[in-house]
Length: 48
Image 1 (cartoon, one colour):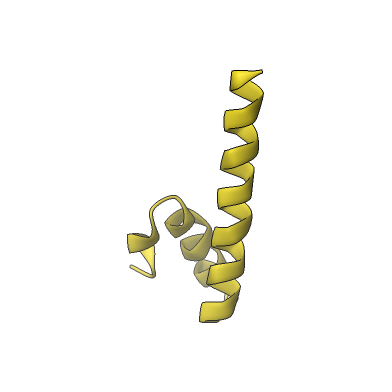
Image 2: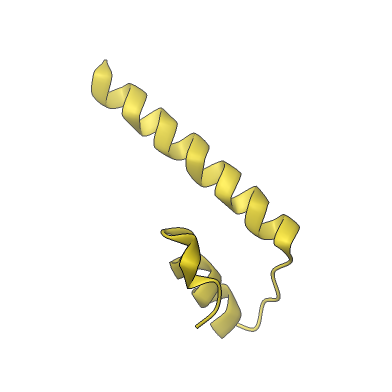
């Protein structure tokens, strides 16, 4: 198990880990920020 407590981000970090990619905390935070932006954009699409 590797950072799977991050919710949806757990799948991406597990995949990266399995591929031998070392993610730093800053990388994780950046990915989480992008995920949150994507989710917000999706919510706006649904409202329109």
